[in-house]
Image (cartoon, rainbow, N blue to C red; front, side):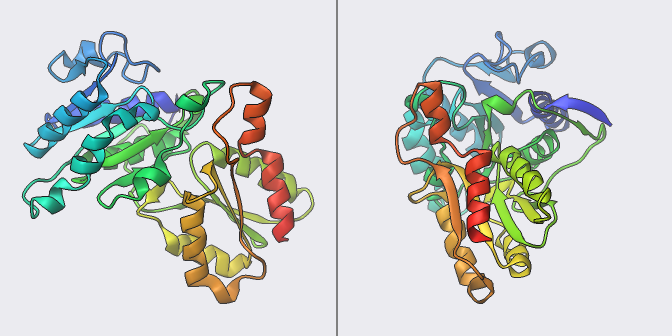
Length: 323
């Protein structure tokens, strides 16, 4: 076993897949000479050279289109967005081409590509740099969307994403890059589309993903002091959604709280909640409760930013409400 940060786990996955498959290339702003804006690609230019680690102009639409064309003709590109907010500049390439090309070409052109980078809010980067994009892109058939919460899943999911023949949005979190854990030194993957029960419980189900899992675990540990047993599920993959694991848990606990960093209206929790109602209506002993970002653009002020986002205290309040 080895203790690594999430950024190092991502780097290992890229490096190992480049070793395994010479069609894997990396491109994006500052991924080469600067070692990546968040040092995820550190050292890869020295090892693999400028033909496989490519610095691009500051033009997301152009290099996203370039990567989609490369994927259609046999490459497996990994596109780094310095922030997933900047993917909006390439929205036409992503929405009109990446997720639809396989369908529109009658199965002739696969688009095996990974779009990765930090998603959601960081520390005081204000509303133009704090969007969570999973609900938006999740509305378009053709995309897989994954969002790991720890180093083990970060490496395993990225390896699966690179090997997938589908376009995958791989959502990281800037504030979690330095979070460490022990992971195996050998080869492993984590399957796309399979949630993980990170803590078993019997009184209430708590579902989330990415950075919010940390707050969910804190809330679960707090309630354990009062002999309340919370089952915590890490989605890991947002699309396809592992509703089977969620439903099995809700049928056991009969109560459920859903947490996401994104907004309340038309969010990931809204979709999950509806599917839980479809599959578990007769098992629910209390209404579902969602804990999401407040319905406002992200404020810049630190105090207002904290009020806008889900916190341990807001999650605790929701858990007590359903109990």
